[in-house]
Image (cartoon, rainbow, N blue to C red; front, side, top):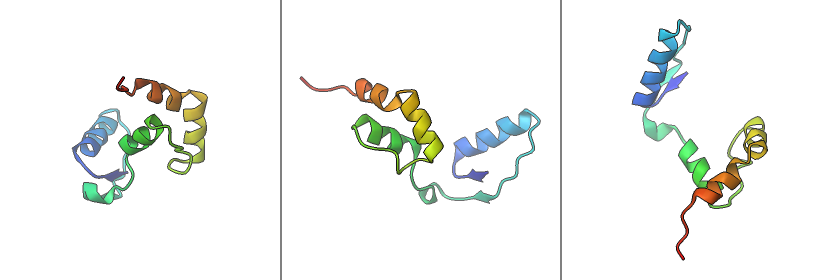
Length: 79
């Protein structure tokens, strides 16, 4: 796994506490992370297409579960 921040460190500890063997390949600054899940959710909430932002299988599952539509419905709109 690659660790970018405190959340990555916590995930590592959780996995290890479950007895899983985890290999940390890199510890990198958060600025090196690139695209985040928050950014993907923002694209979907705005009605954008996330197909090119996520792996093909993830895009199919998001669509199957109706996540883009659900996110669009959660955006507050001004009257």
